[in-house]
Amino acid sequence: MSNTSDQVVYFDVNLKSYLERPIFDVMVGGHDVGVAGGPPHGGPGGLMTGVPMRLGPQTVTWRLDGPEGMPGNGDTVSAVNRPVLTLEMAKHQYMGVHIYPDNTVELVPDDGWPDPTARGEEINRQWRAAHGQ
Image (cartoon, rainbow, N blue to C red; front, side, top):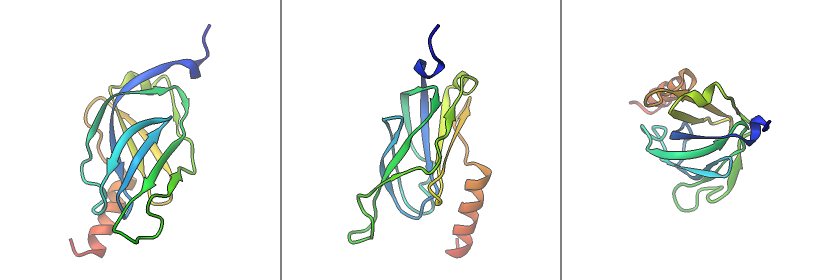
């Protein structure tokens, strides 16, 4: 019998970044899931289709971007947590990858286009209030 972590599932992935700057080379388990713009937190994001993911703990990394001369541009950041992809999550077609300012990540499966998380909506609300939008 095969180990669960040997199982690969495929998702249509939507990336949602709640960072104050653009990011690129976003990788989940070694597979590119796209780029995200800066404020107001990356917009609706695009869709990467057919992204393979192994069941089990996921390593998530991204590279920082921004205006020329911005500190950290080009640096690779690793999520401080390792979200776990379960067999139950694999029953869905879409996967929302949510990256937060504290360098944590959530993987949220969905049967349709992934929505922002409650945490992400609060970050967006605070950003709009601070920037008069």
